[in-house]
Image (cartoon, rainbow, N blue to C red; front, side):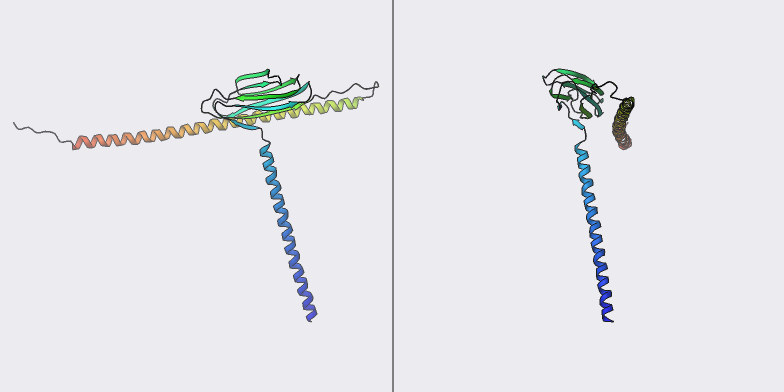
Length: 237
């Protein structure tokens, strides 16, 4: 009888130990997943191409070109601040301006790098004395792949050419979708900025109007009180 009890007690202890071990493993997996998500979010924030440019500030970003003839894609859009405009310029490694603009709201350009080296992409917010500008931008340096001529005629089949054409067509469609998303993202941010500015103006207008009404009421009460309590002089005849 005692051996059976000991056996049952051992099973209960083993079950409790397994339950505790399972709970500990689940907790460790949850903590590991939480740290992974935090690390992923920090990495995503670090890779965001959005910057704030203070008033009268000039901010530059740089991209390296390894060989001549590479394509440089440059996109920017002012998300908030002032009239949603900013000055910009692009310089080659010889400090020569190859692209510039004044009071531009957004732009999407493709440049051909004729010189190897470091290219500078600068934004300047000198037209604003107090307003900060939030700019979303993207700089892409990519080489244009060129297929070499085949050694023998007919080496590249029509099926391969059709497949490459389909791939390039899909790439173009994806780029159009990306540009459309950027466009709607910019419009959303600008609309939100306008709504926020209008809301602030309405708040201060309503506050000043309320203060004016209160001041007018106090002034009227003061005038009436002075009118009825003022004592005049009496003269005997």
